[in-house]
Length: 537
Image (cartoon, rainbow, N blue to C red; front, side, top):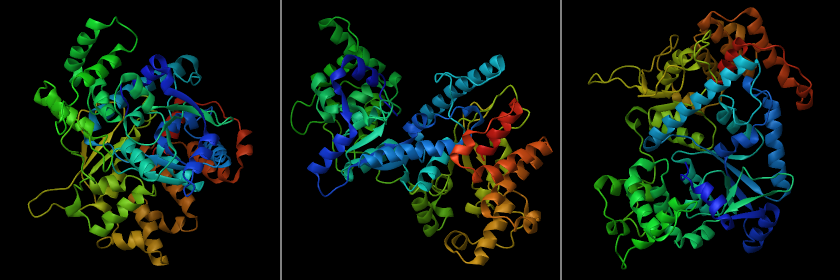
């Protein structure tokens, strides 16, 4: 989420609001002012992925040892400066942001098409960062990579920016590290730029909401309205076009046209229409049509953290917790476990299925003109049906209603006009109802055996139970995955299978330095498609 044009305005038209800072010195100042606390930074991890992922052969979507080494160096630099990091990942897409999510996914599809066009023309991946796509599934893998490195890692159950801003403020953190101007709008701790970060000197830029307010003659509690007038992910630019035109016309009658006049005009408009007396609601001072008033109220309230109020609205309309749409189908302790594991970034998409009945899958590096192998969304659909069948009822209820999961999966040919409704399917070899409580909470050997057989049933590989019991868990997962792809597509050669399995067996025993010495062979679109299927499972 971000405010349209605000980053440019602060950097170009209001440079005093962009303050260079030394993070080590900043940490020392924080500890001096708060001797009983730690110098902590909350990291908006989704905004950091492009900063972290600098592996050269990105088109193949791997290089995980190299990537983990980059993450470790990042962590070490902050640890050496006496700074504790807390990482937050987006864990859900709120429906009010669905349209913006779809727009971005379709826009990234266009970027992916350009990448493949470059590959076809030059027979190599693009070297420009302007023509670059993050490897498929990077956000999911990054959560587990950071946890494996001993880092505090969380996944949001609502708007990610909101949870970052709330956590940072309520835990007295020294700042938020990210790349999103919404952190200027929230009345929270200081916002630091990941794109301006220099690890060698531990310096970056602080975007100061206080200095921005001084330039625009606004109060901090006016910033949410400014964001809505300029446009953000919830209040779209088109919705506020009329008000912006009124503000610009008024501003330009008194001032000549200058860079950033769109922001200056919106700020002046706010100042002119501020509440005239105590207790007056600010939005009532504006001549708004109903749709504008509702959009502004919703937009302003999304920035109000717990305990905060705004003179522009009567009250916060933000509910304290998301509403569980699937509660009638799932036991309470299972829901609690799903929430807890989701928050701690210890599971993937289970919370979304059990709470909202909605699952998203972002863009994948797939070429719509070269579909020798099926899109991952189609290939893994039978597996997802069976996973849903473990979590939700597979039979219609007394009124004949059948539960379904709404999938927003990005793949070639899907215009994302509406979600695909997927019906849960039962496991083929399950004898009696599956006890989710035992499967999830117990650790005795018998339950471990059931977990393995359940995994094989999900992959529809139950007949290989005896053969696979001699392998350890990581290898079982890889063998199941490669076997599933080979059976489903019937297009993998024996050499393809050998290549995938040998990487799983050999690469994990090599050090980061040893992997740096490996050289890739001549690749093809088939290799790229296969790599995408492996990492996107």
